Image (tube, helix red, strand yellow):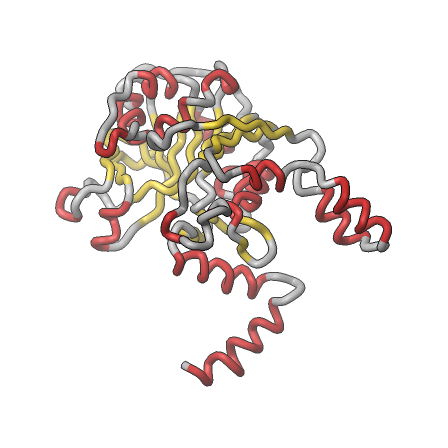
Length: 298
């Protein structure tokens, strides 16, 4: 199998945020699902912070209609900052000023048609060039002592191979995931030989389901360019990963951390409760409420 060595540093991340978010209607009729809050931050900010924590400095957002508030969120808010400064609200001013840390840039690409995740990633090829890069799906909020992307970047820097995040998925739930098979390479690391999109339980090659974090070598763009549309006319990232396996080694990594599927209502609610309990401002009050007030109503 060919072993491709590309650049050493992962400096760029792609955030596909053009989806319609229909599961959360009417909340997402005019507001992007990526801007739905978990405690006091929108989902997309958690994803960007995870990328920044991994040393990534160039954020590329693949947007669609009704997504302008994402760009506004990461833009400088002169009027807000002026008001906070005039009112001596220094802590809030720091929060507003540090949503995008110094040295981090944001670029936006408009995906005119919703043609699938593979198509969304391919639209960033001219900005990525011949470099490795990350892809983060904001629907998947992953919380841990060390960010999932940072774990994956460290793995990439050691192996110089594409890395796909996976988690163990019990029983029939596996049919909602892309599923990999492969040989154990190291602890929590698998050398992939196959990836299947949403198989029936009986056809699933393992219990390892793909979650929304990827590190790719730039060779993925050649395989994305060769994709043919599948169901619904969409171009599937999974199909490009499968053909990439024929050219270079691809690793699956069972990251350490807790994933919240914030593309579902229950997942978003769980994230708000569990991260709310960890929040320094409201954690104690929320714990008291859940224990003393809410428990009595159940």
